[in-house]
Every structure is written in structure tokens, then in C-alpha cells.
Image 1 (spheres, rainbow, N blue to C red):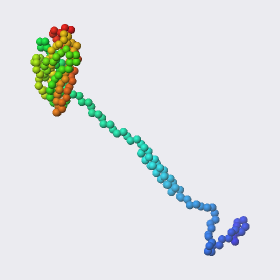
Image 2: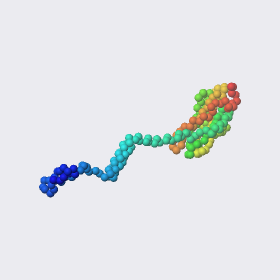
Image 3: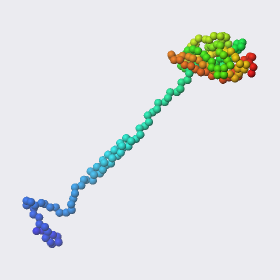
Image 4: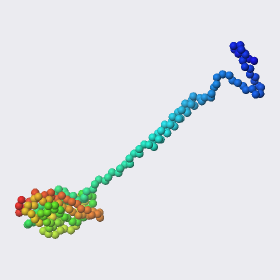
Length: 203
């Protein structure tokens, strides 16, 4: 029997006999991971959590709006007025003309010229491609091919049905074809006839 440090007898332990376990005195020691391995696992868990949060946030992120194709700019008629006008008088008839230009990059074929008379007071008698003074008293011209960027005159002759034609507006429309497609150009020829001289007018 072994004695303790205080002199009292301690428990006896027999070694080497069957059925006898070897006992270890002292405080219990549970197995622990080394500090470096534990820190490594913590770092791995943090990275995995961050990646998972990024993916979840990316799924809920609103998709960017699809680009809206810009609309093509509006294309106006190929035929337009240049701003030049003419007038003349054939006996009791009035001639009015405007210069037009082909603003497109391809030739156009001018078909038919008509007058728009919102207030009436005039009656159309003839129309052709030419300046004032070149138009006969009656009749109309045929088709006219106008090159790209080219200009020509559109002139019409009218019977005057009122004593004072000064307040009357006169508009032109011209039908034309380009690349196999037909179109109509509306031309603001004369807002009124106040500046157009006409002998015999009583205003």
C-alpha cells in the first residue's frame, strides 16, 4: 500500500494482473483541435456564408431593362417648296406658280398637279410643270422626271370668280412616284392672294 504525502495510506494499484485497468490520476483532458486548424475552419465557413449570400442577392436583383430601339426619324415627302413664287395674268385669268425641289437622293416622277381651294372663289383651268408665263390658257402637262436635288416650277391657271380674290388661300398638291411607290406632297403655295396683283379686282 502506498502512502500519501500527508502520511495517510493511499489506494493500492496492482499492475500487470488480468482484470485490472491502468488508471491515470489528474484532471480530465478532452481532445481539442489545434488552434490553426480551428481558425482555418472558421475562415472557410465565413467564405461559404458570404458566397451563399451573394448568390441569393444576385437572384433577387432586378434584371436591367432591355434597351428600347430608337425609332427612326420621320421621313417627309421628297417634294417640297423652295419659297420662290410667281404670278401672272392672262386676260381675265390668274396664273400662280411655286418652285419645288426634290430633297431625296433619288429621282421622282411628277404625275399630277392639283389645287386645294378652301374658300373657293377660283376655278382651275390648267396646270403644268413650268414658270408663270409658260402655261397655255388651257390643258395640262404630262409626267415630269425630277432628278435628285433638282428643281422645277409648278404653275396653275384659274378663272377668278369673285370681285376681290385677295383673301383667298391657294394650296397645291402634287402626286409623284419614287422607286415604284406613289406619294402625295401638300405644298403651301399661297396663304392668301393679298400680295398678288390682279387687274380688275375690286377690293
